[in-house]
Image (cartoon, rainbow, N blue to C red; front, side):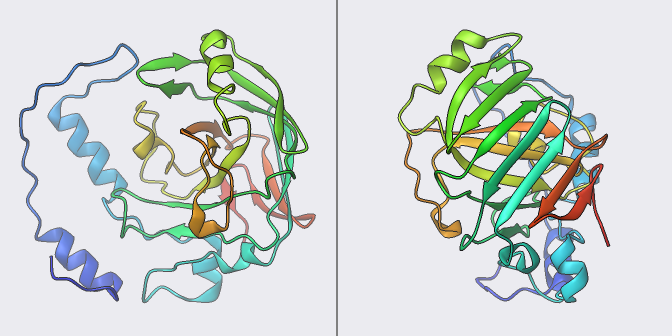
Amino acid sequence: MPDKNDWTREELEEQVSSMTAVTIPVHMRIERAQRIFDLSEMKTILKNAKLISIGECYCRKNRKKCDGPLDVCFSLDKAAKIRIVGEDTDLTFNAKGRKWINGDGLKNMPDGEVFTTPLENSVNGKIRFTFSGIHMGREVEDISLAFKNGKIAKASAAKGEDLLKEIVKIKGADRIGEAAIGTNYGINRFTKNMLFDEKMGGTIHMALGMAYRETGGKNHSAIHWDILKDMKKNAEIYADNELFYKNGKFLE
């Protein structure tokens, strides 16, 4: 692919359509929490994910910026207080001065998320993650976290709770380093591969640990552990008390 930084959507689609996928056998150990797909099933997942997702997230649709990749989710950049409400969840954080980045397909394939980092001491409330957390091949199920002034005050899990509690003891892993909304509705099932799963439309994910510097985050940690929550039922997200996301969809 030519070295170029200002691709249009049409140019990207032309480049992707000309690519050839090659399967190369490698020696690797399959952990018990990993899911194995046959080649035809994986091709279907990749096709549905559209490889490069330039989805109609809220800012793209309303700001009419479809001719080129977006670096920032402009609509949310202006917001300070974010509130997430859902199943066993009522969580707030402050993102004032932090950037929301739109995953537009130039760094990850597939892509499709908008993400930021909360102010380090601002996270309060509780959240229950409805998908398993995967850490080094080990599974932690039904994770519930309670936060007070940015730090985890309580952590529990239906399975793998001992591992969860060891993870949050890691320096910096008791804070949220990323808060994100998945925008790729071509990815529609949990594969236990977070590079796919975190992009799934109708979900949010949060990462414990290291923050992304490009969002303005300052938290340091040896890990960045993503955990996923379904938002397609009885779920809402507010920005400065204004509802902008409901049951897995951005509101128009």
